[in-house]
View 1 (cartoon, helix red, strand yellow):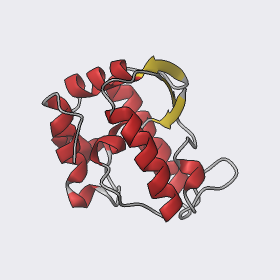
View 2: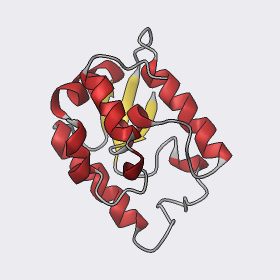
View 3: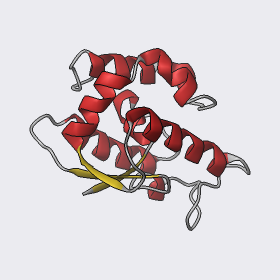
View 4: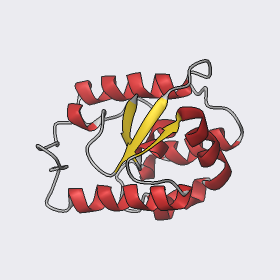
Length: 142
């Protein structure tokens, strides 16, 4: 079972190899490959906390994001917005396929302006492109 924070449910669709450190990039790449593998379904626990990707980020503390004094509040805010938007529960366990279907049905690329407001990665456009691909039924991205 994977543990992913709420906003990472959206990040995985736009991931293109950028990240906070080589270790983080490798871990996200591993997670993204599993998410994009249409042959593989598995359980995902959705959290508003550090997740499988966070523990390889150089900005993680014992239990919180410590990139800057406002980071924890910012990332947990994004997590909560995504959970509410998708209609899922904190610490809920869902099939990957279920989360992909919810994302495809409920999230539009421009919704990221609200859901991910203030995220430094949003400016690159890859996240909106990733969500557009999921909506089109194409999770296998280059």
